Image: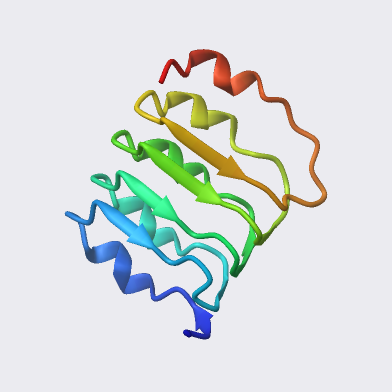
Length: 111
């Protein structure tokens, strides 16, 4: 039962492998400091009020296996750079508004 934005300090947890913030009450954009989470394997951030664009830097999380961003208030297209996430086994994104996008990025995914 949190409220307000995600703490940018989470981005300093460089060895973080799993982050579960489902239905936690957080809101606002995903902080740019999260780009430093290079060891992240799982991000579950559904049913919150996360806003803004889905960050391009997610494509730099090379070990990411599970990405769930459902039930938020994201806008814009899904980053095409997600195609670089070759370890990805689960991808669930919903609630994108003001977007038109292609799913062509999944052609490089094999898991």
